[in-house]
Length: 172
Ligand code: ADP
Image 1: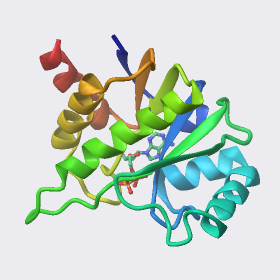
Image 2 (image 1 turned 180 degrees about the vertical axis):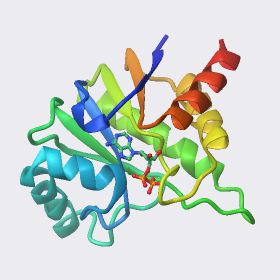
Image 3 (image 1 turned 120 degrees about the vertical axis):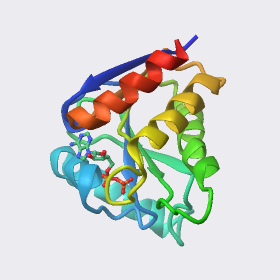
Image 4 (image 1 turned 30 degrees about the horizontal axis):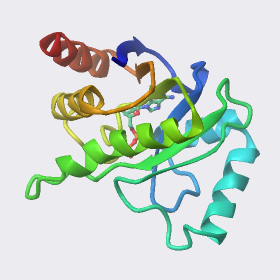
């Protein structure tokens, strides 16, 4: 069974086989953790994203899907880019948020990654309430059929870490 671990910290400093990026569909970088990963990972990641846009992903990466590139200078072999859904009060988009986790792990399996580090997808600019995002993310990973041995959620601040810890405690 996949181990789920939580740490508080900066995803750009993590060491893992694959680091998941909360990207946007353009794949060309943005703010938040996306910008931070590109800054620390260097230009090779953006170059690989541009190649994806020039090829199979001409219209960008759809919400809920995932695709891998080099990790550049990060302490990882791959970055797996996934596009979280923007929070909506009027529409239930939780299946898309779960899909980000399932698709990222499917890509990780294809690559042979055994340790995968995730941020709290959609909980920044995309506005998802932390407790709800934690519930969906952890349930999705728990339910995944994957060869990945460790999924590590790297939570940037106290509040995010507390929300994930509370929910993980309830799963155990
Ligand atoms: P989204 O657009 O999916 O909401 P954001 O990057 O705005 O993505 O935020 C996702 C989460 O990543 C937020 O909880 C934010 O606090 C967190 N975050 C931002 N920078 C980092 C970082 N360097 N390491 C880990 N988490 C980060």
